[in-house]
Image 1 (tube, helix red, strand yellow):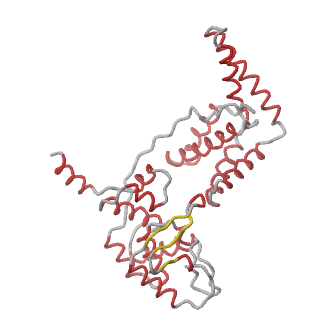
Image 2: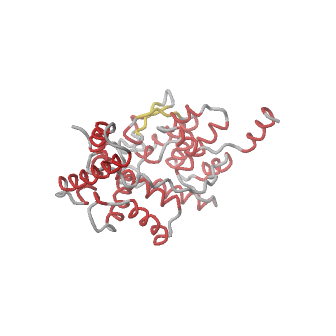
Image 3: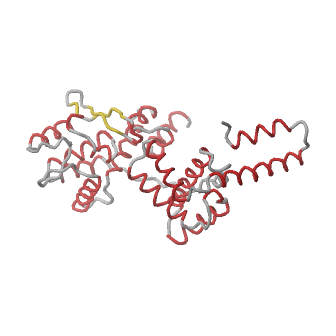
Length: 326
């Protein structure tokens, strides 16, 4: 069965030798109006809530994490609540107006507003692909420009300071594993003891989209992991658990809170798990690791994502300029 857009193109191809340019444009507009009416009529039993839930189900099947789905839902529910008609009748002007007022009402910056635009665009693209609408009204809304800031990384001295400041073997093992592998905090808390290959100093993590990948850690991390596990007397399969009984699997918020407290105690600003990941990417590229290998190590689908994580040392840029150009 042809999609709406394919059907329109097929009719236009059949008539292109018969009609002139003006007539073809009129035919195109008439076909769109006709198909839109038929589409709305065919799906009029589906309300905005049903369409939203169907979209979220599709994203769930694609492997979206629970946190991503929650963000998608809250963003889209907020947008849909501003519409006074069916999503199938939404216009580009309505979306632009919503995005324009979003920053004023919430005080959000361009990065947040562009994230909202991206999610709305993804939703309407899905509606188009599923033939709920003829054409996504978000197509003509371009990416919102944002100021690219150089994000900080941890220096060797700061990481050593954090290691020395850890008061438990568990926290020391967490700092070591994050800094030597560059894994996401969600991947860290999902690790089980059996996932760790101490002989090869590697482990398998479950990344975004349910994709597994192999990551590697250094000898110091191995030593501290062994010491931490040796003092455990619980039977929880999780690699990292809470310090108090009952020893439950450590959650993302638990790691974030613990690192934030560590930074506050040591006088280190903005200590959070993701910064270890950015630090590893920056160091790897700075020391000459091919960007394609860094991409595999971090589990990125697109190399552009890897480049955004990495911050090349400006001193090396200067030295390379003198070597190759000056």
